[in-house]
Length: 466
Image (cartoon, rainbow, N blue to C red; front, side):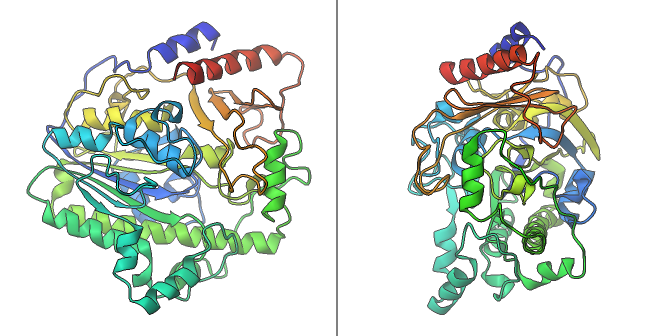
């Protein structure tokens, strides 16, 4: 790739497919979203230990995308990008504390204008929940707590209250008290109530987000299993942006023993399997009602999870475990059933893609570009690179907020290279063909100055033009 070709790709960000594809007329949309699901931690993505039978089943009837990327490795800006089709630098919700602007046009507005019933059930992370962003039906965390007795709510907070906890253990709660159980029940109720008219349902689960405390039956799925641990270098994080090293040591992740890491991963896989079971409840209801014959189904996650890799947990960085996401698209005719696509896609591409797959023209003026043709195994104008941006979040990245307010980390990832660009600090360049685990920062290697400059120019251009 040269810079001219990359800029052409950027300029063509809203271009459509080369060839038309068969459209389903006014198909329903069921969007299944989890929180913090590492792409590799699914059976359909080749993991031989984690158990995800329901997601695997959707993948067997749809198309799995191997190189899908979020536009910010943190909940609020990522979710804003998914529903608007724009990067955070344009939609404005850049950090965890930022509400998505009320005038943002979203996928819910789009489908609502077509006469669809629209619903957002579960964790959408709108920050300001008075803003519905086009969804006429809304069920959220407050709705979940309202249905609990005072004693149940206290039990829930004691059991699941540590949102950043990375100690793996089984939950003491009955499964009915988990918020994701409630979200699945509400999604099922919505499907039954709206089976006779077109709908756009966004069912968004909290798991496998920390704490790593699944219901005991999902914890016990991994009883006696010696789980594989990620490779951890004794000098991890020392050759790149030093803020990641500071954060990992502050949080205690850097010092995790192998046994502590094993139990944490067991808790994470338990969370993944519990989330998978709730995805299955919703998808099974769709089929029970016969709605799968005219519904586009998508499964993805807002971002990934480090799960101990590079001695880190959660996200807030540009490593593959954090920024790459699972993405499965199932169409009513099961186009490409069980196949995989290796080209790069971004989550901003979902809005125009889903509009086209459901039978409409893609929206104009968004960063996203439709990859609907590739779902139907037709040639399309694939991206040359993926772009993501991370703005330092208050009270989350480091305890003293030393990086808050500084320019963001900008990622540009091609087939071979990944640059994590900081205009004010040491950047990171990885050769993903030679070093897929991203262990060696080659930013200073002889001969790499040109590629680093080219990719940093692309990143800066995207950020500047918005």
